[in-house]
Amino acid sequence: MMKNILLIIVILTFIWGEKSMANATRTETVDIEINKLYETIIDYDKYPEFVDGVSGIKIISKDETSAKVEYSLNMIKSFKYIINTKQEKPTKVSWTLDSGDLFKKNTGEWLLKDLGGGKTEVTYSLDVDFKIFAPSSILAALTEKNLPVMMNSFFKRAKSK
Image (cartoon, rainbow, N blue to C red; front, side):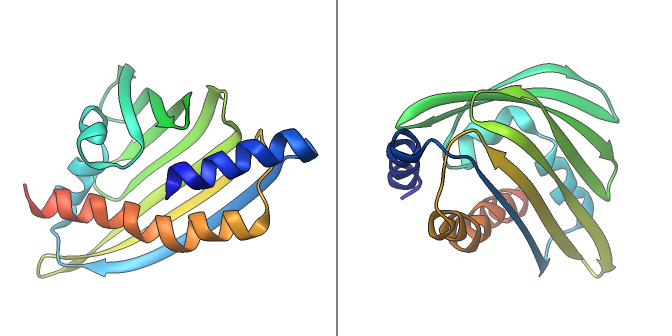
């Protein structure tokens, strides 16, 4: 489905030549210990194994509090972008766009709150500005349908650890 959406976006870009922005925030409570979820989020090398559309990851630099990561996406066309992350163990991972050919802006964060008893409140926020046009209906589909799927892929991975 993601590949079909990107194909439509690419076609419409050539027709209208506009740019589009989107943002989304989603909060869920999950039965996952906060540290397990945090470690899954910062395990960037493993994203191609469980995050749909991510075909490759290159860690440019990484330490306890930050990372610079190049993402390769393979959806109809190959895209690459680099983000700079800030990591505050175990409650927050935030990022900003460094460079890339798909986004003009890509900022966001994972906020994790330990609720005790192995439960974690998770808030994922994203604010992107694409270099290509995307109708609001396409952006809504990306945020309303694909955001929960993406978050669930992280939850499933963390539970399997």
